[in-house]
Picture 1 (cartoon, rainbow, N blue to C red):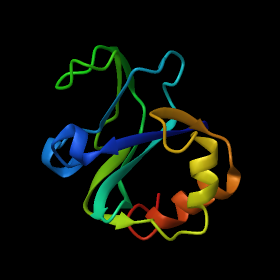
Picture 2 (spheres, rainbow, N blue to C red):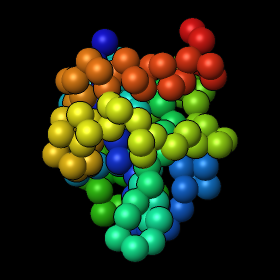
Picture 3 (cartoon, rainbow, N blue to C red):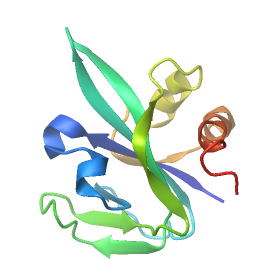
Length: 136
């Protein structure tokens, strides 16, 4: 299974993943051929004084690739999942200090949009993070 990173900037989007309530990621990057992959949604929030905190906000198996990105028309594409293969975390899990986060930053060109995750340490770290919530 391929794994993909979705970055959600809460300030730019003017909402949290929990507020939006959709297992969806929007991007200007191509999404062709990603069906069946796992999407990991990391949200960035401003923590003041030029620092950010990062949270795992949602994860899902990609079931649809969509042109357009309602409710954000400024993005060219979207991916979607459903509740049977993922979830929005009611309480996002902070990952700012996780040992795998620097590798994720490197893999995704400093959290640039929608990207494939190749670092196995990151994938294992994300899987371990959700294990207590999603033991499937």
